[in-house]
Image (cartoon, rainbow, N blue to C red; front, top):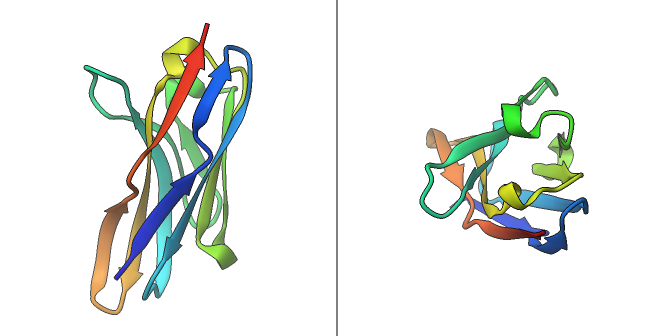
Length: 119
């Protein structure tokens, strides 16, 4: 059984910072890509950032230059440092990871963590 557990969400004023964490646990052989997505009320889920196991990254246009994704392969953990937050960043943030277990490779999702940015 594999789980992704997120932490670090909350309420912050515009211009502030938050750091999200997501740890994968269970019968894991290898974690490939890890990433963050978000979904605001009434909107589709969108990519925030993704990081490959080797460290290459990709960001959504709306967060480039403000957010930084990183990972610790030894801990199967991915982080999202969010700076210069804006009210439009308000959403539920979901962790995603491609995980190889002895049963094969699947995409897993966390339960989501709320980020609210007040103006």
